Length: 155
Image (cartoon, rainbow, N blue to C red; front, side, top):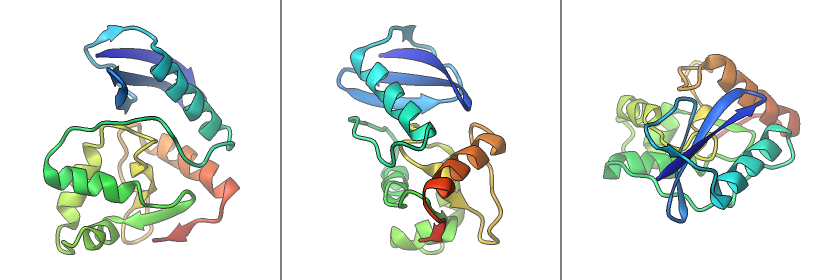
């Protein structure tokens, strides 16, 4: 596994790849050797396009590891449309477990592939922004980018 650090408009991001898959995008360094592979560079380029409002979806191969429940949550997050938001309760309902909204929050917090798996689109039931691994300012920035390109909707 290799990772590479990039400076972006929202701060440093670390992109990790294993073989032919992106396995992690985070705002914190992981303990892997630094090497910029073609896949990592392509992912960075797509993230830059997203941050510039020129890209609404990603087409890089990803592979995430987690429990079956976490994977179900992360797959549900991928279905939240660009420019839309959903609540933890919405996600819990969408995976067929409407009372598991707290567990959804925990799984959301463990999302290994920030931005591409759009956990930043999850908000509290009261419409307030809730925690984000990169911090609330980054979450606000990501939602603002999407709002400027699309009106915010609720799932």
